[in-house]
Image (cartoon, rainbow, N blue to C red; front, side):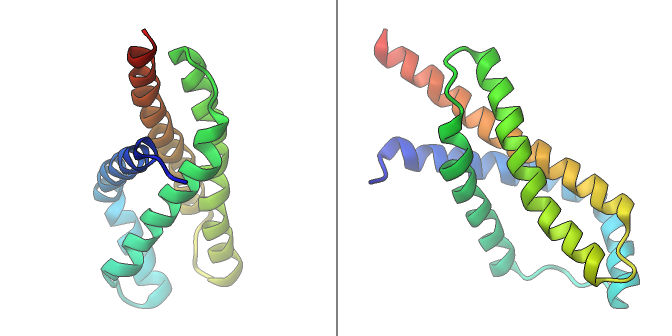
Length: 144
């Protein structure tokens, strides 16, 4: 059963992920645009529905598999665990995409994959960590 806190945490993870990713995509778009032109022969803007489904699924997976592993109640511990588990999940999820591209697309670049996997580790760690810090603070207020 999903609690109202669960829904709120999902929304926080989703919003933080979307905001951070919008900044990343905005700053790295020239790199990806050039690569997609090289790989596909043209640059094509992503289709909205499949793109949104990726965010919804990644957020669901972060809340389901990463967030419960963050057990600390001190901010330092939360940050440490979020960086580890969120980063590990992000590197795995983004790595699956990037290594599949490296395996199947002749012109896909290792440098872009390295950047993307690093980003995936960071954005997943940050999104989950920020949500857990917000809800840990909220829990502290209710206990006190």
